[in-house]
Amino acid sequence: MSTSARYWREIPQRYRLEAGKCSGCGAIWFPPRLVCKECGKREFEVVNLPDRGKVQTFTVIRVPPSEFCDQAPYALGVIELENGVLLQCQIADCSPDELSVGMPVRIEFRKIKEEGEAGIICYGYKAVPVRE
Amino acid sequence: MRDVAVIGIGMIKWGELWEKSLRTIFVEAALNAIDDAGVDHIDSMYVGCMSSGLFVGQEHLGALLADYLGIAPVSAVRVESACASGGAAFRQGFIEVASGMSDIVLVGGVEKMTDVSGGGATFALSTAADQEYEVYNGVTFPGLYAMMARAHMERYGTTRKQLAQVAVKNHENGSKNPHAQFQMKITVDQVINSVMIADPLTILDCSPITDGAAAAILCPLEVARKISKKPVVKVKSSSAATDSIAIHQRKDITHLQAAEDAAAKAYKLAGVEPSDVDLAEVHDCFTIAEICAIEALGFVEKGKGGSATEAGETAIGGRIPINPSGGLKAKGHPVGATGVAQICEVVTQLRGDAGERQVENARIGLTQNMGGTCASCVVHILEVA
Image (cartoon, rainbow over all chains, first blue to last red; front, top):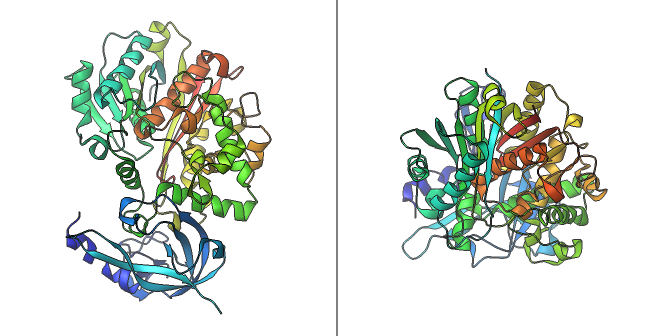
């Protein structure tokens, strides 16, 4: 089990979707980087990612890592947010048959997993279908 | 730079080797390579291994294995690049001989994966993906490749059956390889109807957990011409490339950019085109991986990997035989050993020693070994000298 520092140092990204916007070319990186992959600049401003997007690809995990045993089967996808930034997360609150490429989703703050009796309860983001 | 040749190769039977330890399987493969080469000393050694620390609690493999092989005090280090560790180690050996630093270099690859539970192996393998932004959310390696497969199917119309045909072809080839973990043939229906791991991939779309080792011996080409009693195989080119470790940070999730980049350099250095290659050993850790790899290597048009496989173009006797050894799927995938075993198969084929699985008139062979979801890729081109 890792120390709690490893968990809390990622909180700005996992709880608030904080990304880095390059002051040179405007590219947005999530998680933030120290060097822009597009233009090589090293200055960034903190921006929050939009919470709407669509599913670019997905799978259903049937054989999970041990920390996720109590959750399987669960869906996971690559989500393209409205500003073009991509992230990877679980797709919650829907059955496997409902999943499709292009499906609109909203990013929500959710519990991800528990480390066990003496560990941390880990939070982060999941996508949920937008039903309109 | 000096021209470099492979003068010795060593394989052992791969599988669930309960009675043998990591050091034993490594030394067995290395001794086979030394005997095959007929050399009386080794100047330096590289060991490809992804995660002996997590699989058997043992780091510091260079010294351990040099000691047990009886070659200490020579320089010996481990090279790690996830599932591309073997290919990366071979590349280091190539560079050391080409540079003139050493004459006889042994490159071995090893992974002992069955000393941990299935969950322990899944965890160790998952460390090749982004721990904070992929694995944190519950993804597994089958899950990552499943997402690549879904995107490929959506964009190019690749079918479930075409994916299955990669596994069927590789088991057919593996049935002719005495070193392969699985030597039984399988059918498309068996693949499609086997246990689902991560939709759309079933267990027969996935390479297995394997204990295994492989070794090769490199020397200057001019030395090989003097001392080798077998057909001399020259390493025409060696190259490597990297890409984003997380699949969602790539511009095209269906494309193995690092494979294309490494291959482009390797073709240029060797002065050959994809159409000059007679056979290739590619990194089919999952069926979709072989389809993406043959596209990135330029053997088929982008998006046509599935239909080319279905048409038999990649079978032994086809236009471009892929994975005559059985590939990772049937031969097994002891991760750190895989890249070195690919070299062993290509050398076997170029020597004309592959028996029932021999590709006719094989003169030029290529290996493509990748780490994670192709965040690392190593390509080598070999030719009968």
